[in-house]
Length: 206
Image 1 (cartoon, rainbow, N blue to C red):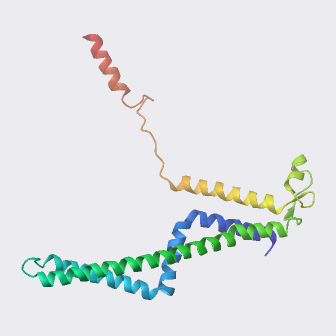
Image 2: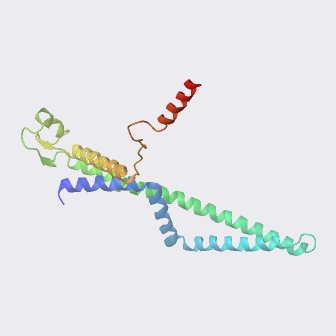
Image 3: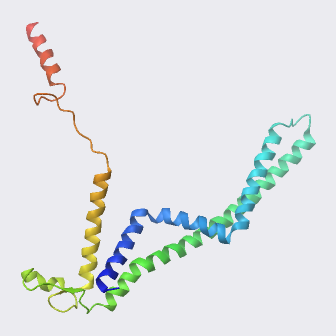
């Protein structure tokens, strides 16, 4: 793949992840991670919740005065289930925090980090050359910092791709959002103007 397409693809992937949202990606990746590496803990959590709900329903139907022994036993069972569930939730929370740190680091490395490495590695390379005289005195600026004169450098091409994608994102959002138009009355009068004029005329006649 040529350098011009490689840089564009990296910038596009970075912007696409930003459009989707890191929180959405993190939640989706965490669900997959749970199903693969924490399947037992998730199943135990689901089982504990079901058992607690069932025993709470039995506890509500049991009289503390008439059936105190059964009520006390159910109460202890519910308390133990809640304690076990809280401990399991804490373990899953710690696992999610560690996974979130690794996931965010991976996303940064695969997007911003790779862009930085590519830009530094090809800092003296020309992405493409401009036709002579097209941009006049600005031609030297497009080759900053180290690309050959008359060419576009990696850094400038990255900025141009990012800017074009953001403009495209704005256009798509404007087209997708419903347009709101103000109702206009016949003859160009503002809505309600005729009513106000009639009211003022009535006051004058009085």
